[in-house]
Length: 499
Image (tube, rainbow, N blue to C red):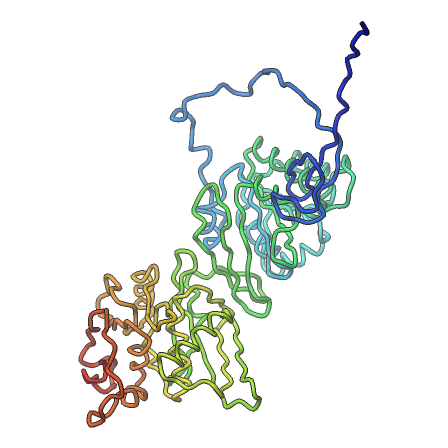
């Protein structure tokens, strides 16, 4: 009987996604984890290893006995950034700040570096994109000089770790993580392997030393953070720096935060002398006029938990082309098209042969549906060439059936409008508690809202001698209780006009 020969199975090759690090048993064109195309590469067989128990760095303790004072947040010196971070920088935390080129990331972090530097907390600013003299020129311009702020221009990871050993900073700022490379790995700076290695080394150094770290990240043309998605998982906080380069407003929005909420935003104003936090940014979104003009309406939007008063503008002109233009700026085009259809169908405003332009003021982008009612009123105001009162705000979502729906945070919105001096508001039914001294009118549909325009109220009411062509449809909601006089100087509302 022939002896059996024991054969060893040949190790099979394995595949890994260079974008997110997902391991796969076979090659595929698209990674099922991150949906990136052409990033799966062969890297050899997966070795089978067993790890034996080893020594521990510190014994496990009950969680109640762990000292939480060590992780107390420390202020950066910039209140708007502290708001987004949840109170400040936690020792050992790693923060990734990403944004488009020219939005002001380097300017903001240089200002943070100077304000956070102190005798007991040194700050190390490492730049991989500029020379030290170029950063010094910016520091002179924005007055960001400090004896405890150290500056280095390096692009090698080993040199960066050497500066950390020499300076011993309490805060490290690296601009940017895509420009630093490790000599022990192949590949150009910014590649997936290099970004993972640089981020991993800096995270280990931050945790071991209790050093807060701010990393600047590049973004792709789609607005996503460049490099492997693993980078966002490794860091503690991910912040998005947004803003139009042609506008003064800049917004920092929290995407991930292990130490606080992600629904806070920080507002900044970028000017020649640097960047400045805005505790009350609503003034950037309003146009100061002596008299109200047609085609404008004010609303209150929520950026995270923060209410901001914004102005919506509309302009209608006779079209000279067969297909009228519909142009928007700062508003979503599909949403505007829907509102225009509702205003024409349920509000009786003829828009077919008109070029319609809608925009916001100050570079703010309104994407939440609470601005629908303000857009509808602005369009109707422009159509009738009748201005709305300057002390009026409109809040509400408009549905395809013409109804005005409730939105979140109505009480916070009304409180912010009242604080800024607005005395009247058009809101959906049941707005909740109303600030003292503010007149709130509840509107259930777009027709009732459009009757708030002085020039349209008499035109909307049919003559009493004329019999209606069809019986009115039954109303499911309760009649809206209007005040005797909706606005100061306006004519009283007749009950027949609201039926």
